[in-house]
Amino acid sequence: MSDSLEKPSAIIFGGLNTFSRALAALLVPPQGDSLVSHLRIVDKFSVSPPTTYLGPEFPKVLARPEVEYRQANLTVPPAVASAFDPPTGKAPYTYVFDLTGEVNHDRGEVIAIKMTFTVSRNIALEAAKRSVKAYVRLQQPVYETSDKGPLDEKEDVKPVKTLDIWWHETLRMLASIENLNLVVLRVGFVYGPYVEFGLYALVITVASIYGYMKKPMKTIWGPGKEPVHTVHIDDVAGALWACAEWMRPLGRQQADAIAGEKILFHNDKGKVKELAGTCSPDVQPVAPIFNLVDDSETTLAKGGSMITQFFGTTFEFYSSLETAMAKLKLEDLEEEINEHHVGTWTEMLQLSNPPITYTPLNAYMDKYSLSRHRLGYSNRKIKRIVGYQLKRP
Image (cartoon, rainbow, N blue to C red; front, side, top):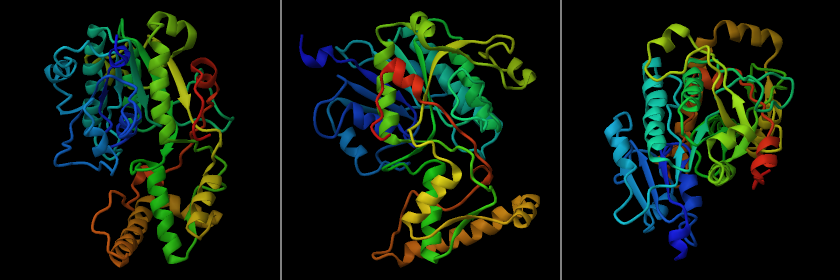
């Protein structure tokens, strides 16, 4: 049997605007040997012409003969089912990577449910029917943790905002699907090359503005001791693959016995009752869950200082009086801050040599990015059970 036939095949659903480009580049590098015999990427975006940021490397991945991109509406079950049909003469897909889900907090609850819960359920039901060897779900940093220290997977971390709650409810739904070889990878705040999405990309952009103005970057959330744990995009891709490889020989029952965790209810019982496919509030489904963060144990103060230092400025906190006043008029503060940031960012782009006419980065800070964040995970379990070694510790 040839080497290509021995390799697994994979589908990546969603995430073209977040992390699927990095995963695709790991599975099928622009140059060199691939980890899979065939890779299909399925998302709502067009890649020719592109309707989302692709970066300079991803088109090279798409040019590889092992890779196929398919634009599809994943809210439609027949479109999802069709995406599972392998190319003529090829075996059924081995792995499914579910990177779907709404990531914009300013969208309404209806969109959050449709683009997160419904899409993931469509994919998972088909994956269970097709008996894929591993279904790896990437869980965005949608939780608030305590300040007690890095929390392991047994701790009941809680979603707070509406979008976060439906990401969590999606996990409960997935865990309740029989015969789904589910593994959940729960990541911290992601950074790295071509990552224009998320909290850290925005903070880096804003820090560059304050460096340009030669002013300190300030926040009202002093003293900054709360954890905001991070992970490099290379490790997100690497751990997704490692989780799939770990699950493949085990199956769900054995994987649950080794790494299963209860997923508790944190939603409105009335809303859940009205939605098809939800898990009963009284049930605590179990699934293998792994946290993924680096070893830096980043705090707000530590992360802010490191980023601003790179741009030749400092990270500071407002006084107690200024903070108290700002919290009373947070909406006014949001408008004032963004008028300042966006105007300066536009100036920086125009005065660049040569001028920058397009960038996927923006300096607009919404209520989510301006709010307080606490996310502190322990990464010991994925190291111990999966054997994953961080590339960027």
